[in-house]
Image 1 (cartoon, rainbow, N blue to C red):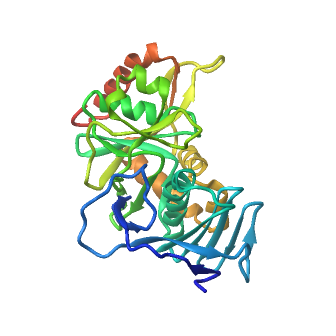
Image 2 (cartoon, rainbow, N blue to C red):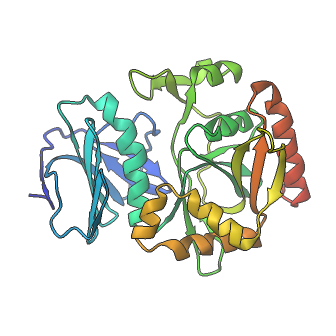
Length: 318
C-alpha cells in the first residue's frame, strides 16, 4: 500500500519536466509539458498506482474530492483518480481502462496545479509572459482567452513564462515571483489558424477535442517578479473596453477568485497567501481588470493597449 494505493509501475521509462521551476519526474508522458534535461533529484514524482476510492480520516470532502492530513484524493469521473501526498507525490489510476491520452491533460494540469497548492504556493488560473525583467499575468476562467492572448504576445516577441496555471511564491522581501513552466500552449483550431501557428501545432489535448498543444515562440527559464496581473473580461454591454486598477481589497478578492481551485484555498486555510500576493503585486504594477472585445479582428488593438499600459507603468521591454 502507498498511502491508500498500491504501486503498479512496471516500466523503467520516465520523463523529466520543469513545472513552476520544479523538477517533475513522471512515468506518464505529459504532452502538454516540454521535456527537460535536468540532473538534480526531482521535487515531484508522478507514478501510476492502484488507489482506494476513499481516504481514511477525511477532514473535508466534496462530490469528487476528499482531503486528509497532507493527502488529497481527486476523481475526474470516468477518467482518472489521483492521490496527492505532501506536495511531493502524485499517484494516478486510470478508471475503467481510460487511455493515457485521455488522462495526461488532467495529471499534468489539474493534478500538478493542486500539488503546488498543497505545497503552500499561490496558484492562479493564469498564463504569463515576460516583459523586460518581469512577468505579466492574465487570469480568467476556462475559455476566457488567457492562452490565446499569451500566444498573440509571443508573436510580438514576448517570451512565454507559463500557461494554464502560474505558481507564485512571495519571499521575505515581499516580492512575488512567478516560476517558469516548461509548458506548451493549449489552443483551439481557430486560434491556431488566426495566429498562424499551424507549424507549431502538436498533439491534441484530448483525442475528441479540436484543441491542441502548441509550441511557444520562446520561453523564459527564470523566476520573475510579478509586475502586473490582468483579470480578463469581455466587453459586453454594459461593460466597456478598458483597463481598470483594483484597490488592495478588491485585488485580494480578485486573486482569490482566480485561484486554480478557489474552494481549496478556503479548505486549506490559504486565504492569507492571496492577500500577501495582492499586496506584493500592488506594490509593483498592480492588479487590473482588462475588458476587451473577443473578436480576433480586435486583437492587435488589445495588444497595443497593453503595450501602452506597460509603458505608463514604467516597465522596460514594453
